[in-house]
Amino acid sequence: HGQALSEAIRLNQVGFYPNAPKVAVVVGADAGTFQLTTPDGKKRVYTGNLSEQRQNTTSGKTTRLADFTGFKTNGTYVLVVPGTGKSYPFEIRNNVHRAVAIGSLKGFYYQRVSTDLPAKYAGQWARPAGHPDTRVLIHPSAADANRPAGSVISSPRGWYDAGDYNKYIVNSGITVGTLLSLYEDFPAYFKNFEINIPESGNKVPDLLDETLWNLRWMLTMQDPTDGGVYHKLTNAGFDGMVMPDKAVKDRYVVQKSVTAALDFAAVMAQSARVFKPFSKELPGLVDSCRTAAVRAWEWAKKNPDKLYRQEEMNKQFDPDVSTGTYGDNNASDEWIWAAAELYVTTKDEAYYTAVNLYPDDKTPLPSWNQVRTLAYYTLARFGNDLTPAGKKDLPQLKQRLIQFADNLIQGADRQTYQTVMGKAAGDYIWGSSAVAANQGIALIQAYRLTKDKTYLNYALANLDYLLGRNATGYSFLTGFGDKPVMNPHHRPSVADGITSPVPGLLSGGPNGNAPRQDKCPGYTATSADEMFIDDSCSYASNEIAINWNAPMVYLAAALEALQEK
Ligand code: 9MR
Image (tube, rainbow, N blue to C red):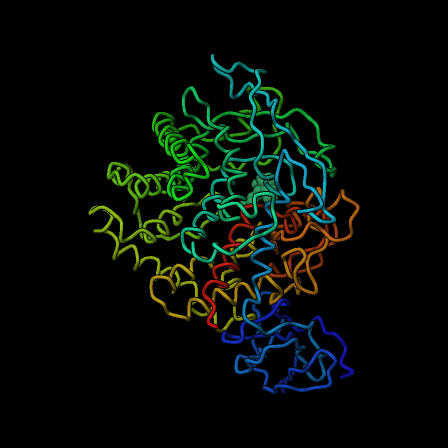
């Protein structure tokens, strides 16, 4: 004992499974030994050697690994490196990430629009309802004979997208799709998984109840007359850093877009499958979702060129809209995703052949503007139930997903943090935490196809990354770990006067371009893996967003479901 806490020791600050890899990273240490001790330093339980030195080519920093995989005894420990200091305390036990899985799903509850959050569910983060969204204006860009400019629709509920208070269909699409896929991949795990929300205790799993809050909003974004889907529901400009109930500016739905229609079609088709076993509890829902999906698809077929172009929209219509664009000039992947989900739900081969599902041999990592691989996950998941057309392509599809995972892990072992995350310089983009989490999902898909534990171990390494084993030393999930992000760009967390941010929200993470994107003062890093500041003005490195939280929930819950006890 007597060791001082050292920020140079980077590890998953939450903990480790007894029967899985356990790795810490020590920055700048000399060769030598390390020990595990009880937190008071009195009892030494394990001694190991630090690895050979590795060097990060961008930051120049050197690291050594402390691998204590061989130590499997439950308890709370610190890692001690003589000459460096000791780590934050961490646990070794089964189910060690269950609270992370529950907390990151609960994060969505805190993002609920149009409802108050009572203390019973929200604790000290209780707050009054914001944004009833029962009187939303048709923006001139969305006007037609049935719904002229300035007429009013009701479009309540949904989740706030991120640190801002707007609701965007494109980003809701991948978010809901990821959460529903988590349910489809691990239905048994969610039989006993409650997160203390108003619906807890009903017959529908909390994962699906929470997702329904947003799904019901999405349904209101479809124009009943033509089946088109408004791109977003938004203020004209971003709100100040105020609580939801103090943000009372006019809300609009803006023009319909093909990307919104197709993402909507994909998740509605998926919902029609997922909610089927709950038809008694949720009468009519499955039919509504299926009809909504088909109608959005038909609209997209008639309007394939209707991309969302905010600048052009602003040249034609007032008021100007300056909130998030989720603009995407290429809808080919949205076509693939919608076609695959409609095909798997309806078994109608017309959807399978409607678009070229395999235009090239790429397997892009999912993100809000690139959803092609979500289609592949779904086709692989339902491989046994496909019609002949789908079955014929299945062996190649599986090969593609395995190859994708192999490419991800190739060389990861030699990285300074021994993670898949960060292997490619381009991983450190706006929302890089979602890159890490989505890589984890890709690896879990490969594990499901092969049962090869190597994939699972690398998925776990990326979870370690998110919870502290990274070049910033932060746990990117609010409320979890000993050095969690404390000042995310998140309006309620800034405005509520409570020291701790709203818990269970995933910060975007390091972003090489953040300083010029958000112009927040205070960046000192010179390499992309460290380009992060825990400051609420840093919306390009420290905002939270639903499309980042969803793969976090997936990764933590899937690893919990698959842990070896
Ligand atoms: O996640 C989005 C990122 O990929 C873009 O580079 C960035 C700038 O367009 O926008 C991000 O999305 C934001 C959205 O536009 C508005 N709500 C907050 C989102 C997260 O920062």
